[in-house]
Image (cartoon, rainbow, N blue to C red; front, side):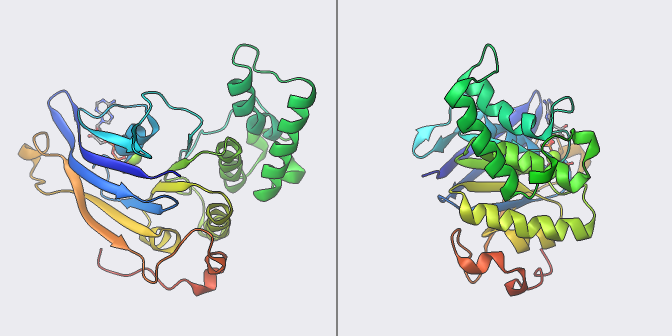
Amino acid sequence: MSALKIDNVWKEYGDQIVLESVSIDIEDRAFVALVGPSGCGKTTFLRMLLGQERPTRGQILIDGAPLPPEPGPDRGVVFQRYSVFPHLTVLGNVLLGRELTRSPRLARLFGAERKAALEDAREMLAQVGLSRSEDKYPAQLSGGMQQRLALAQALLMKPKVLLLDEPFGALDPGIRADIHVLMKRLWHENPMTVVMVTHDMREAFTLASRVVAFERSRDRPEEKLRYGATITRDIPIWPPRRAGQASLIRPDRDGPAPKGL
Ligand SMILES: Nc1ncnc2c1ncn2[C@@H]1O[C@H](COP(=O)(O)OP(=O)(O)OP(=O)(O)O)[C@@H](O)[C@H]1O
Ligand SMILES: [Mg+2]
């Protein structure tokens, strides 16, 4: 289970109200796409779900319990860039999370534990199509490969919630389409709830089971600090798209993005 309840959450930085009265229930295994203008607080919202930031008011519950105050292995994250460590190989990057949680001081595993971790890491790399690149360094990979590596790294920890902040924003359109197919398959095969920020409406409507828009109700320059953004639209995709449905991995079944959001 990995249901999220965001209950009347506010986030302020000093005098600036970034988000106000945000409430949303995200069901277990949903795929939520978060859209909204630049600067409206999408990354801030994701960082609160990750535990990097605390709400000023309100609360966030995961499966009915308050969200742990620190980021933990139950929440994975992939950013637009720089999610992977440049000095580690592909395999080393995927292994690192496991090494750090099992052996926080040495960040090394031995014997049967290392063997099991290697097996899991290689299986994950196969899932994202990077088996032949395990000895390469991130600088030797294309942008699409780096983002697939970041996904593998996050997924190896089997997060209950996967947070994606414009993960495919820097990729060119052809590679994006391929990674969308992959992303659907990963959501389909791994039991997790996904919250993804994107600027791309088509991406939102192609991938998500629900599209949520953040906006400021008042946007005059002199009001910018005093009013935050909140959820202004919450659109379920119809017919309902659920994790585990075989049709999810057939991109030809997805219609074009609705206009006018
Ligand atoms: N640590 C911080 N301290 C002070 N202000 C911050 C901090 N983090 C974010 N902000 C402010 O909060 C507002 C929202 O920022 P945020 O990065 O969440 O927007 P966003 O919706 O992700 O934008 P974009 O689409 O451009 O990525 C901005 O005005 C930003 O300056
Ligand atoms: Mg952002």
